[in-house]
Image (cartoon, rainbow, N blue to C red; front, side, top):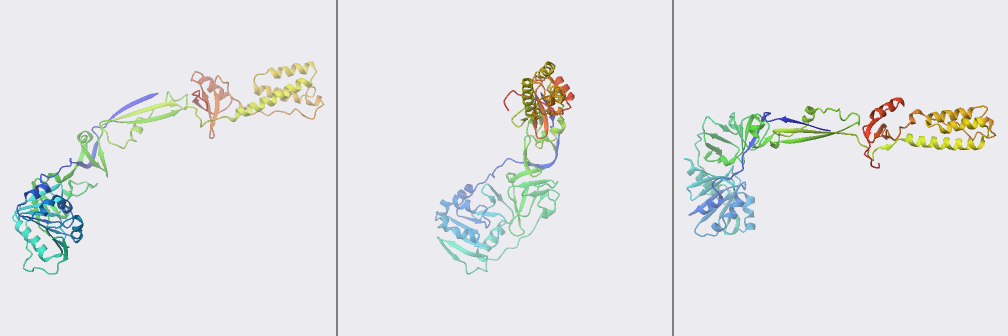
Length: 446
């Protein structure tokens, strides 16, 4: 028996989560920057945001004697340049960590780089100060130098290269910001379960804020530099109380896991019920649907109800063995008595017992016969060769037309070929005071 019910979840609500944006790269690439160099390029990157990729892309530039490559990086990276085949350019290391990689082309174009796929031009009135700050680090805060394939320790500084002072002019009203700036809408680097309006970025400096269409990133100390066309940085955006149908075309993050809402899904449930119950069994569709934990616009609950079917896990009831033992013992006794008894009345009585088809009655008549003082064992010159036979009503088994008894564990089952004799089976069980579950005999050996 099959039952089906369809649930419409299209208007179900997801209270809070994130929509993922399609991954995209910035309009500017490392190759673009390298190819645009006329005189020199400066890269300040101590956290290896783009340094390794830059060294690969800039191979021709490094070998161009008319153009200068200047790098300010970490001690770890500068010590690895030799193994990377870098034999030209001018590199120094510093312990002053960069918040984000800064690239300066020909001292005119300034770029902020999160990784090789996300590079953005920055243009502010403080660009000259940015150059002077990095220049200050190169000459006053460096520890090792790598030039012409040789690594050496920096033992002198140029005190004349003074650290510039930035004027901090932050906007007072942010549309989004990192939590340190106390805005109601947040810029984040990962999705979470807090119920707040948020943009999650691929990469982000520790402090940043958004005003109109301009994103300001903390770069050098407390200096925030602006970038436009920054939308490719967005990884996901929060939403509240959206319906399944409104989100069905989006890749989502909900309750700590990635989610895609399906157009349709099916949950299949199979039940095995007794042979006399499976056709009237009514499944609880709501309860079954409640087991579904995924997300779908439409859920089909498909229920299949079949009778419990006999298999190798069921054991033929011990009653059959006990019945066979009773039959064999009784037949042997009756045959022996038939040979020993000559009395006509006793013979007639014996024939009646032998012709009785009900085993329980046959045993009862036999026990009465051997206990009879006139015809029983006392009248025979034997040493109690014939003993009374015990028979328990619980050992009764139905006719093969009705079915066969089996057990599994401590439960008794009545296996039937078909459903045509269910009434007979129920009546037989009641008459014999046997509790058994009706099941289907599939006709295979078990």
